[in-house]
Image (cartoon, rainbow, N blue to C red):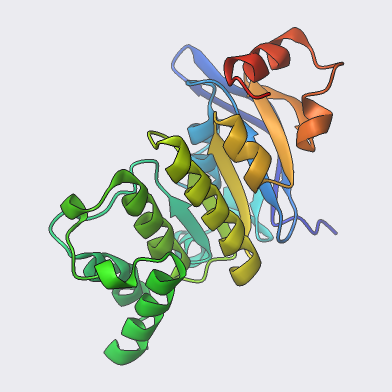
Amino acid sequence: MNMSVIYIKDLFKSFGTLDVLKGVELNLEPKENLAVLGKSGSGKSVLIKIIAGLISPDKGHVEVLGKNLEHISKKELEQLRLKLGFCFQNSALYDSMTINENILFPLKYALKTDTPAEMQKKADQVLEAVGLLRSKNQMPSELSGGQKKRIGIARTVVMNPEIILYDEPTSGLDPITCVEVNELILRIKHEYDTSAIIITHDLTCAKHTSDRISVLLDGYFKKTGKFDEVFNEEANNEIKEFYNYNFIK
């Protein structure tokens, strides 16, 4: 019996004549953070959109929390998505809502049995967890890029997901804020017992937030393992070039 929370085998996806994924295989274990590294356009975001059921693969087996996405009904997919948290690259906050309203929005949509007081308690708890409880009445336009990332993570965590999909969580942030977001990702894992796939081209993020990393190049995973195992002296030239590009000492 497969115990992985995400299991993918022989996954293919093309857009017209562009072959993006060419036989991807992946498994995510319970309470594991897996970083997926790759250059821009390598198919990283396509991969997690397939996992979330936002787009369909051309071929291959995709299993999430024991559900085969090829044979899942629309209702089952909606229920499954409640167990998946998707942290968008741009945080995807609603500009016309306060921070508090942004956090409450998914709760009002999904947890129709909770009272307003219960939902507010959950919102306050996650805002406290990301260090922004005092900012809950502010608008997104009043926040820094790093604060928006943290609110995006809080809005994901408030639904108590089993799996979180992070799409470029440190993109566009300064080095100090990147460290803060990396530490938050680790804290979320330990405090909420989540599993996560972290899509990134930032090796520092991958090194500090993940248990394992997979390098996606030319449509499939070239190498998977712990950071030092992947970027060792025996790594091939493509992987070494990726390492050198990030200037990690």
